[in-house]
Length: 116
Image (cartoon, rainbow, N blue to C red):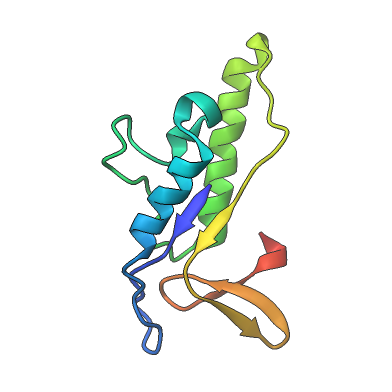
């Protein structure tokens, strides 16, 4: 799962216009959907970025993503499908809030890294 937050709604957080292209480069570098099953990340022709951009509720999106992965595993289990590694990559603003490292939703809400 590769989250790219580029358009922030919170005063004081600048937009990050290079995130969309950076996110695409990361996906392209890691492999295509035939290799790493990145169908959760881009449309078939890689022209449409999925819903993991400009996220307010990061934890909710991660949970939805994991549910989707679990469904894929159930579909392929009979053919030997399983998940042994899950990569979550975040592009966007982060910070340290009261000594806790956090990533920020586009609304400025902090999400502790260790809670994800």
